[in-house]
Length: 258
Image (cartoon, rainbow, N blue to C red; front, top):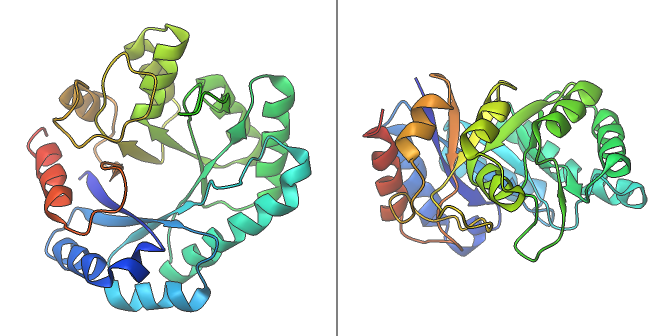
């Protein structure tokens, strides 16, 4: 059974705790919904515990903050460890099985080797490296967009893999590569978890559109490039939405495609 995740940042609980509590109530009435929280580094252990108390026994997956995080830069190793530590504490509190982590920035061997070194030193079997676009939305080069780069980091560190469809499509478009062949190369790495949203091909920017707002062939992607027990976080919407109506609509949209 595929499971679908509602996405939040840990700081959203301070903004609108009732939104997250309501989301947890929706999840508790379904067998195939989980929640993914990006652990913003300023969130304290006590705040994570308050979120845990508010949502009860809903299954949670964690995403490490990517603000200021760059594993391809040796000078940032101590800062990277500090940012990751917040996600690790959150994963401990929620008993999360995975922590999604970005590799960082830059193209080329030296960036890749440094990311592999740092992921190995992080030494946490819950970490899953996420494939990234070729460029971020500001035009900066990003690391970890090709299957061989993801495979290298995994081989160095024994981490898992988070397959982000929109990142992959943006990367394929930027490099003028066949999208399906590109997706297939990533799917063959046997992802641990998935991220999915809608977007517009051949747009090179990650738009985080709600399902049905773009032109991605989502039924094809969902059925052909996710396994039957996949954990799929729905990374739809830009900014924090205090109503769960669109989250539930996105869930029903994907469910209807199976």
